[in-house]
Figure: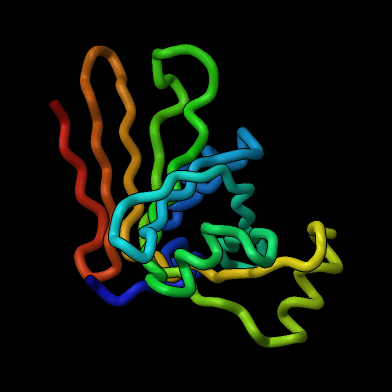
Length: 157
């Protein structure tokens, strides 16, 4: 798996695209997180992703299954809530990477002060390895993908 970067790094390298993806996540509060169980099978769960302090944060209750999954295998995929309807007018976006468990008490305190999550909670910082956006414009499917080591690619179908 490619080395991941923080959200601010991705946004600095491809500002327009990454900002659009962040804004797309911001349209809805709840999204779908994909993790890997200890046996390697996939698990999908709801999550409130948060973009703050130049990072993408994954917060969850202590003792949650998704937290246990990320502790044993930090790889994740986060899919934005598609919203109502079937036209994908807002586009379909997802982020993949590794989740880094935060143990720095100051980072956790700062986050908790601003977000006020239910306590106790686990906090993970996303190291992004891929960002994908799929949209349909004038009967053309536009697939954009960004990776830290490859930059932005666009395919039209």
